[in-house]
Length: 249
Image (cartoon, rainbow, N blue to C red; front, side, top):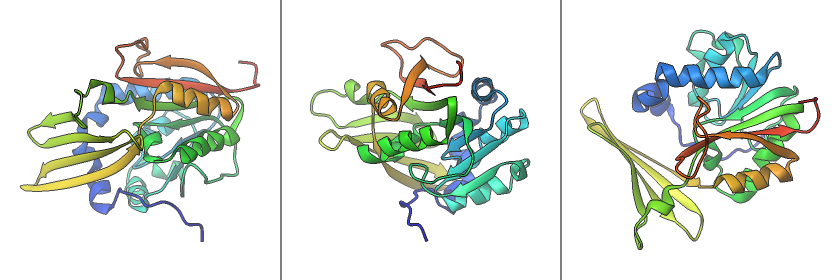
């Protein structure tokens, strides 16, 4: 049996994912994301690394794109399987940096900072190599990731609050020596305070471009968001598209 890294997404979280991060389920965001990915996938199949509960995979499948996924958390996959349209999406439980599927895809995509769940440079490099192996010539690898907020920290500070609402407090604790940020969340849910934390290896776009180059991928385009807002020095996130050689694009 293949050993895979520990998952931080358990049954409690998988069942409440849409309640804990409601902003991820805004109709305009899902529509823009699905349209962007569908344009890249074209007639070919798509593979989602870290498919989770199918937030994007299911509506992308409904658009007529055949979607497969790799997911480390059995609890997240179980939740996906309970949703309409799940029968059309095939999911492999495993580590998306190393798991191998039989097919080849016109699009591989990795959303919502999930590349940083791989907490070593070696794992992140392996992820790019794995994406390249699953792509057809001319296929695209897409990553959605934030810009590390470490540059906004005052001298001597290590904490950055990224969300603060009446029911949700989230902040990062940076360890510059290891290039790791521990993300900590506290929710007020059903009258109780629930907490969640996970380590992340933060990366800049230039770091990802170097990993892509090592995997034989070249940067095709980069945007600030799914609506193709231009990426610039003020951008706090990026949507990057790298392309595998060949295919005539």
